[in-house]
Each structure stands twice: as C-alpha cells, then as structure tokens.
Image (cartoon, rainbow, N blue to C red; front, side):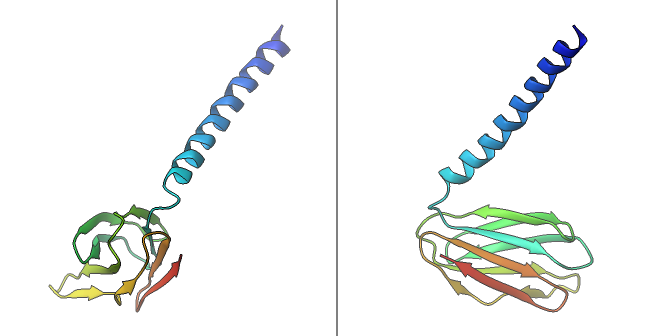
Length: 121
C-alpha cells in the first residue's frame, strides 16, 4: 500500500513539473515572432533602476540584481533601442542605439565599464 501511495505521489509531482514546463515553453513559443530585449546585470551591485528605451516607448525595470537577467517584450514596429541607467550623481549611462527588425531578441549585458549589445534576428 505504501509503495502504491508513493508511486501516485511521484506521478502527481511529475505531472505538475511537466505541466509547468510545458506552460513556460508554450508562452515562449507564443511570443517567438515578437521582438524583445534580455537585459543582464554583470556588475557586482544591484542596479536600482534602468530603462529599455525605444523611439516611442519607455520600459522601466526595477532592482536588477547582479547576475540576474530579465526579458522585456516589445511592441512590433519599434526599431531603435537603447538602455538608460540613471546614476547616483544625476548623470545617465546609455548604451549605443541599436536597430532591429520586427522580430528577434536584443541581448544586453551591463558590466561595470560597458553596456554591450548583441542582436539575434
């Protein structure tokens, strides 16, 4: 009886894990042809506030911890992107402006000295 109970519990846990994995995969496939930006913080500190900027919109991110990455979905039609980080002294740190098409992902890596971008159409 105990073996059967543990077997059923194992099947239930496996179904939950597989179902949640399928849900994440389904959501990512649903947005496969839409543009987006993945921003990664490679600095030693948390970035309290930054923005993914486009020619028409602003997508704010709060508290991007060191080593963390976040995905920002973008609207189709927006083709020029850059990252803006307000600094403590009142100045602003910006990446280069990048042109992308209506699909694909822009990868952004923020380090202590540079903001690098790589586009995968």
